[in-house]
Image (tube, rainbow, N blue to C red; front, side):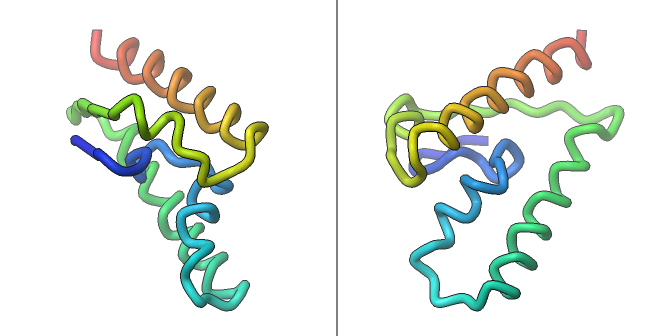
Length: 90
């Protein structure tokens, strides 16, 4: 998966998803449903027999769509998932 403009959906934290969707004209309920739906997709990462390759440009990691602390959590998730995905397929 190549994502040139944002962190791929399968690796996004709830705060990051909210940051992406903040420009949309959504009610809080609709926003919560969209965030929940996106996070439920993460279950596919745990399916045996599947492999994933993510290519993320460096600029995406510097793009300030959320504040510094939530972005640190987002970056930590990417690191954690990279370790999980590597250990799952070796």
